[in-house]
View (cartoon, rainbow, N blue to C red):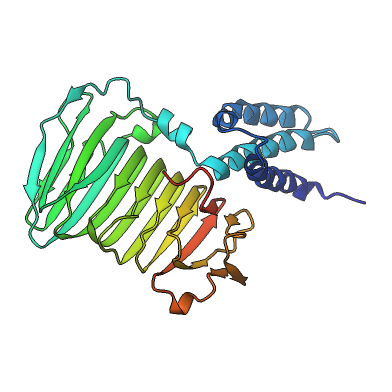
Length: 326
């Protein structure tokens, strides 16, 4: 048998990128060990060096194999657990000690909420009424830029166009309380940070998420109303608890890991993508596969119908994982 060296590196990469998530699910690799996979990056430099030294010999492919194997292991870890550890290390929180002035406002019947956090931690909760409240801390105690009216709220980091993604931004800690009475549209942009959203009782039109190198959990289990979601992950992890309400939406994970928790008795229709380095753990949950679609039997007559387009590129989706979605 003749092995084509041009495909050898790709083969090693794909095997390891797929084997790591399987090993994690089988319990052979712990979360603690996953977090240390990023420490292997110097092997990429070593592999390049070996390739240069052996470039004129028949062993010149060895350097490429070292690089492919290292990237495969790192990507496999990323598919299994997202980049919680990486995003946490990309902006320092050591100096987040100075509280900034709190902000308050009131919505009318509707509210358009735009949040852009560049390096930091965001917690979103709800309270009865029509008033919103923001508090928190950052390095200098100045707080984010806030713009508001009776129908809109815009909160964004002051260094939103800075370099926090590379590890030099100021860390912000935001605690935002949203009201349950008005109908809200929530759009969250998260760069190198963490977000936790518990939206119990909220009346939601749409939730949008654009996350780059971050992690988020969203609990929609007890929302009063919701129509659709549009979530995009670029190198991140997301835990999403779905509501016991009919809804539609799309979730795209590029080098990310998504955990979905569905309410008991809900009808599900989950459409998947076609990437060869994507993983979908939808089997074993009573869903029937038809091509790229997984459906709960009797979906069309179910009281609650949740239809989601779930697409991964070097990413993974899991349904009702043992560790939950919190």
